[in-house]
Length: 248
Length: 248
Ligand code: HEM
Ligand code: SF4
Ligand code: FES
Image (cartoon, each protein chain N blue to C red):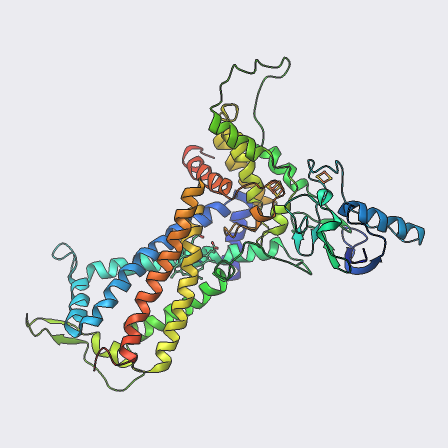
């Protein structure tokens, strides 16, 4: 396959960015998108040029580091992560535009790499439960009703990749927060901090400079883990109840 | 003016209130929905002629008598709507500027998947509605200017009860005999339909009432239904007048 790539290049956090065009002739349909970029980087290095910086870790769709916007869609045209996207999703002769996540809360560090620690700070603010560590508790000591367990599990599949923010017209982090609030709020272990959690997470979210949600739904459509939009409803409902329970 | 909106922006970042702002906007928005449904119902009375329409206007003015004075309810409701408008618009603006700041660098290529025309037009459509509301109030409530021909007395003697009552009928009929007035109203009703189509669903989600797929579908359908009923119901009287079915 012959692919033309239009890639955002930026030398550092405060350097100006620009789009750079590259040709790649020896792409096979079985390559993952990241393998295709690996090949491009080898070519660039052979030519004595700087390789394109991008993030990746597990390359099996579970860690959430490999975010980039491909032809205007986070993680590209399929419902999956960039590392699990394959070149067979494109056609011979295609031009593909690759950009970093665009959100001021996720500043660009270099090329396609952004700083996503804003999500970590939201988690630090409330995305935890308090338990005694040491010996593992007996698994059946806290029964969890099946519907709650299923819903918590669905929300818990969020890998914190940030595609929801990248896709959102307001650059809001609500789907991510909704996933965490639903995941922990549905479980008995998450109840002690349930109300302070949602207040603290929303406060951290807003302080990081994410936008406000307008319920457009681009986030859920972009999410590689198919986190449903209704977790944002749960976030809103919990926040509403929390404001009347928690005095700050 | 700048300082005024800056304090809203600061409030969001330090206290995490994007959700609280959205919540207030949703409550104000639902009050508008209730109001436009009532207003549309009242307007349809014009299809039954001068007595029905003027009679309705009169009844609005004596609603709540003798506990409330003449026009007492009307003025209370006007003040409530005005306050809600200040809340709705006053919070939409800082959220709008926040969304722009949350993505100060735009994508070179951006594809939306789930966004609709209605959901993309919420902000500019809202501005259009505000402009229309000002025009509409000047035309029929504050200045009562006639773009057609003739001058009409503010009051008229009811032929059956012999009371002196409000007389909006001739001004309304004369105005909508002018084609471009009808065109302005048709465009405004299109903007209103779009705003309601997304707004009703969005309000349900913002209030945290769409937690299951069935509830989400119900709010979405309510948005479509209310948008259709309100816009069609509002535009029928002007069209009926323009085509001479009423008032000839
Ligand atoms: C007067 C000018 C107006 C402006 C500038 C305005 C602006 C906005 C904006 C920016 C939103 C949020 C967008 C979103 O959530 O996607 C919104 C939501 C909404 N608006 Fe308006 N609007 C106006 C008038 C109205 C009117 C006249 C109605 C009703 C007849 C209305 C009903 C709603 C509803 C129900 C919502 C949903 C609230 C929510 O998103 O939680 N608005 N409006
Ligand atoms: S909700 Fe989905 S898109 Fe957002 S961070 Fe989690 S996995 Fe990624
Ligand atoms: S590299 Fe881990 S999800 Fe893609």
